[in-house]
Image (cartoon, rainbow, N blue to C red):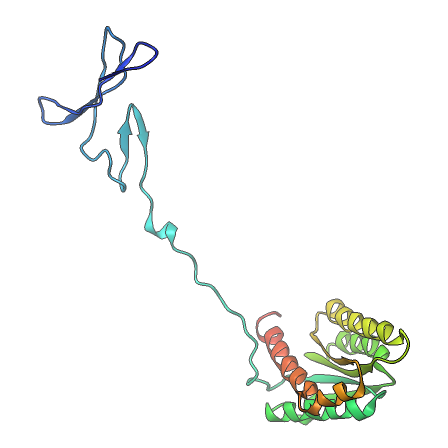
Length: 225
């Protein structure tokens, strides 16, 4: 038994009533006490219990703790039948871009893309890639557009202007049309870096981007229509 500051006392023991049920004594004044019945399952986690006159529901359904199955949407690189592609290639720095194109076409063949489902469009330089990619993508004749070019740094800031513009143009083409436009434009410090990435010791970025184009085309065609 404890006395609080208000002159009320608490009896903290459980008392067994005549009928065998445990009872709990609520706060009382010095002159009176109120005895509240208490169920024997008062502290059960899975059931409701009564505590000092308040009923607390602790029951939780196990189904509420379960989460719905998560869906994973992934493009396939093996189901290429019926997919059509356009490749926009810059003629400037052709010694690099032609090798990138060959790597891309070889990858398309390896993954069973029919040659009649591939159109190659040549443009003067990388700066012109964006507007052509957008026109092709808005034609709705292709499932993905692969953009190939090579921008190599020189003695002036022209490199920065072209590199930024072509990246923005390819991105805008995809966003404005809803058709995947794959960025396969090399931006390199010198010709050696470019050649190394066009079939040299660093692989062929044209081939890598072609594989990306296949996967994105499949993702959009099968899951994101």
